[in-house]
Structures are given as structure tokens and as C-alpha cells.
Amino acid sequence: MNSQGREPSDQQKHEAAVALLRKLKDKMHTSDITSARKAAYQLSWMQEDGLAILKAAIFSGSSKTAKKAAAYGLRSMRGRMKKPAAEVLKEGREHQNRIVRDICTKALLIMEGKFVPKPRPQSRSGRGSRGNTRIREHRNKNRRSYQDRTPRRTN
Image 1: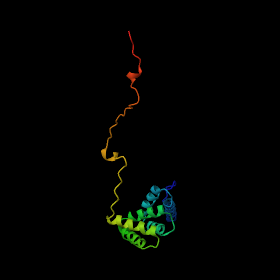
Image 2: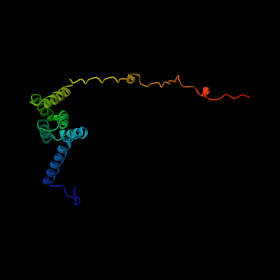
Image 3: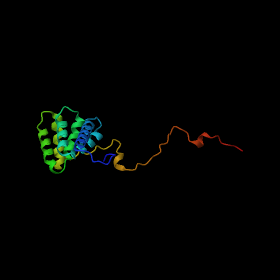
Image 4: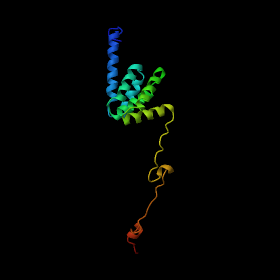
């Protein structure tokens, strides 16, 4: 509501929506994957407008980060927009760009529940499997102990 107590007009609502879409689009094209994914998720709630922006991000010459975020946004589509989002990803699976193909293929596998993540490699020291590690003391054999260093008293 405005300070005068009036409802905003349709023109003002439209301008605010366009400004929000532009802001989210710019945010999605950043190099930070976390903020890009958050923006793509918010775009996934915006029905046709969000779908158009996410589709443009996947098929444009944007960065790999933006493409991954857009695929995340398309995967996150709900309701009646889920089917068109899956169609966009299927279209991307046949794209000439290898990066677009790989991103869209992986997104479709995740949507279908067929993607199995690779197991994490074990750490080199093997401490990950033991949990709490014991601290062991290693004595230096070449060094004399405290008792050997102190002079003995004679009475």
C-alpha cells in the first residue's frame, strides 16, 4: 500500500514485476552459484515469465554457472509449468553445445530420480572412517629425559 492508503494501479504493479524479473535475471548471471540458484528458484515460481527467462539463460551464450542455475530453476518448476520445463530440458538434450547437452541431461536424470551421485573419495589418511582419532605421543629416543639432565645432589 502507498502512504496515502491507495492501492497501486495496474501499471505500477506491472512495472514492479518487470523490475523484479530484471533483478532476478541479473542475479542469475553472477559468478556466485549460490545466489544464481536462489534467483533461478525464485524465477521458477513466476510461471511463464520465469520459464522464458530460464529458457533464454540455458540457450544463450551465458556462463556455465548461469546455465546450471537455470537448469536448477527448470527442475524446480511445479504444477502446470513442470511439463513445459521438462520439454525445454529435452530440447536442450539435443542442442549442439556440449555444455548445454550435459547440463540438460543431468537435470532430466535428477527429475526422473535416476541420477546416482558418485561416492565421495576416502581421505588419504583414512581418518574419515575411524571417527575420533587417538592422539599418540612419540618420544624422541636421541633426547635425554628430564631426569637425566638434572644434576644429582650429593649430601
